[in-house]
Image (cartoon, rainbow, N blue to C red):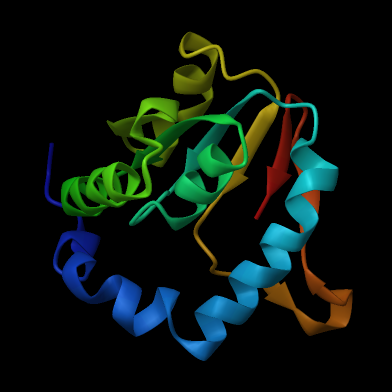
Length: 143
C-alpha cells in the first residue's frame, strides 16, 4: 500500500487538531448527537478514524468498532490510544482506502452504522452546526 499523506501528520495530529479549540468543539458537537444516531447499533464502522479518538469514545460507550484509515501511522497511534484507554478489545483496526469501504463494511458485518471521522465539511453554520445525514441507503452516516 502506498504511504498516505497523513502518515507525516500523525505524530502531531492530536496536538495540532484533536486537542485544539476547533477540534474539541467539533468533536463535542458530534459526540452529543451520536447516541441519537447510533443508540441501537452494536457494531459501528469508523471511516477515516485517524488517531482513533472517536473509535475509543464509541468503544468506551459500549459499542464494537471497526476503525479504518488509509494512514498506517494514524492506525498505529489509534491502536496505542485504544490500549491506553483499556478498550482495544472492542476495536478492530484496518488500513484500507475509502473506495473500499462499502465492500469492507459488508464483509465485516458492520450493519447500518458508520461514522465518517474526517471532520472536513463537518461544520456548516447555515445548517446549524454538525451535519448528520443518511447519505448512503444502508448507513446512518455522521459526517
